[in-house]
Every structure is written in C-alpha cells, then in structure tokens.
Amino acid sequence: MELDIAAAEDSLRLYEHLARLGDAHAYTPEACAVFADEIAAIERLKRERNAVVLAHNYQRPEIFEVADFIGDSLELARQATQVDADVIVFCGVHFMAESAKILNPEKTVLLPDLRAGCSLAESVTAERLAERKAELKAIYPDLAVVAYVNTSADVKAESDVCCTSSNAVRIVNALPNRNILFIPDENLAHYVQRNTDKTIIAWDGNCYVHHQITPEEILAVKARLPHVKVLAHPECRTDVLALADAVMSTSGMVEYAAKSSDTEFLVVTECGLSDRLLLELPEKKFYKACKLCRYMKMITLADTLEALRSMRHAIVLDENVRQGAERALRRMFELG
Ligand code: SF4
Image (cartoon, rainbow, N blue to C red; front, side):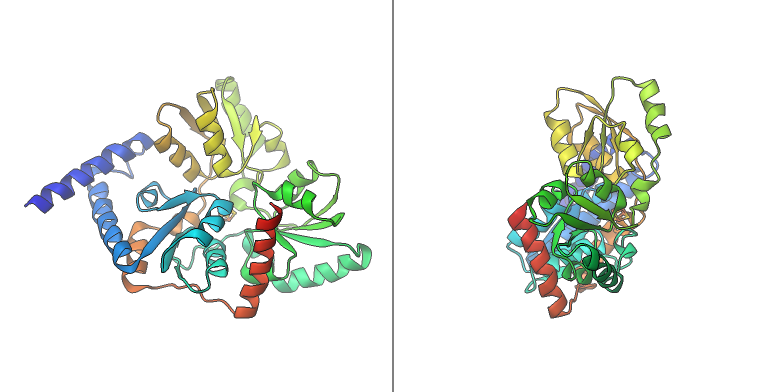
C-alpha cells in the first residue's frame, strides 16, 4: 500500500514537471505513470549494475530524468573518461556511444537502440576519406584531417584530430598545419573558415536536422518578436547563422541563456535542447525554431530499461580501430 502511494506521488511529480513543456498530448497522467515506473526500475538496475546513464542534450525529456550527466558531445566525451562505473548506458546516437567505448575499453557501453545512427556520420566512410586524403596530400603536403566527433570510429582512426562544435575553431588554430580537410559537416567547416586564416577544405556532408532550417523561419519569428535573442548551432546553414545573435554548441546555449540578462530566446537547433532549457530555466522563455532528430528520438525509457536489464546492445570495436580513434580524440583533449 505504501509502495502504491509512493509510486503515485512520483508519477504526479513527473506529470507536473513535464507539464512545463506544454505538450499535453505526449505527457498525459497515464503516460507519466508508465514513465515513473520505468524510471524507478532503471534507477534500481543502475545501482545493481554499477551503471551510469549519459544523455545528450537532444534526448527526450523523460530520458533526462534518469541521466547522471546531460551534455553536448564534448562534455559527454570528457565525462566518459571520468565516470567510476562498470557500465555506461549511452542515451545518444551510435558515434557517441562508440566514443565512450573508445575512451573506456574496459567498460561495457550500451546503446539502448542500435538503429540510432546519424545522417552526418554516415556521409563519410574511412575508405572515401583515405582516397580524398591521398588526392589532397599531393596538392597540400602539410594537409591535416580534422574530424568532427560526429564520425564513426574507423573514420576517426583515419584522421589527425577530432573536434566538436564548441572547440572546432580552437583545434584548427592550434594545429601547426595550414591546410585542413574538415569532415564531414560543410556548414561547420564554413563557420570555421570564417574564424581562421587557414585554408579549410570542406567535406560535402551536413546534418539533415540543422540543414533544413531556413532564414525565412527565423525572420518570421523575429518579425513577431523583435526583442528575442537568436541562439544558433554552427551546423546550421551560413544564411541562418547570419541572423543569429550568438552561434554556439548546445551546452554553450544552456550556459549563455542561464547567465544572460535577456529573458526570451529563439533556440535554433534540435528540439531536445529547447525542452532541456524549458525544464531547467522556467523563469525564462524559449521559442522553438527547432527540428526533431529521428535518430536521437529513437532512444526511449523502455529501451534504456531493457538495455540495462538484459545488458543488450554493447558496443564492440576492433582494437586497432579503437586505438587509432583514441589517438585522434586524445589529441583533441590536448589541443582544445
Ligand atoms: S541532430 Fe544531426 S548530427 Fe545530431 S545525431 Fe541527428 S542527424 Fe546526426
């Protein structure tokens, strides 16, 4: 009986918390009761298995409830090296779980749904990169390959150093090389080019989520709300970034919004970040010019619970590939 009362209280608390998102259709009392049970079961299994949950900023709001740490790619990569746990459950997409495994070969890293890939990471393969590198090195002997972390482990292993959206400019400027092949996001490559005097050669990939956001959408919101501060992710198109008050990574946006004296923001990135901001900074207003990432949203509480229960979907890497990718990631930590 006491257990029933505690469960009902947890469910009500969750319902009231998620009501701030204004999505009455998704977060009904019934849905929140199911989520509350799953959250309690995940917390029990985390203790039993000495596991932690790392969650990317683009995850579903209910996933944030079981996360030991929420962040962007750089923060999660760093966090993965510091966790004192036997098991990491990675609520994000495949390349992120791979990065956690690259840096923690002795730990078990679980991805709740193996279909959670990334259109950007899939735009480059190690074979195509090796060919392009050979072509370009004939013209630019000092060429260095800078790989955005949104790449597979074997692509990282073929690269000189990794970067994230928050340190890309810093990494490029810290390298001794003048000529940089920047893979795979063309929009981020163009953003870096505007912030360095080095030669940046862009790959022809993009994130389908950010690339579909248009300047017209931003202008329409600005026409209605001229005072709103526009925060945009550098994976957006150049003509969208030109309309932004600040261009930064997702966690950069969280910090900026928390510290800013402004109170109303237009968040131009994947919608999960707007949800995180709405839940964490209820005193401020966040308008969404965002799109959903179908890969990020494949991760559910039910699959997270099942991954922990049956220890399924462990990331396995070839050791040579892992070591090559680790070299590129660790160089990023040294430089940036
Ligand atoms: S938001 Fe874009 S870059 Fe991030 S996982 Fe989705 S498709 Fe990949």
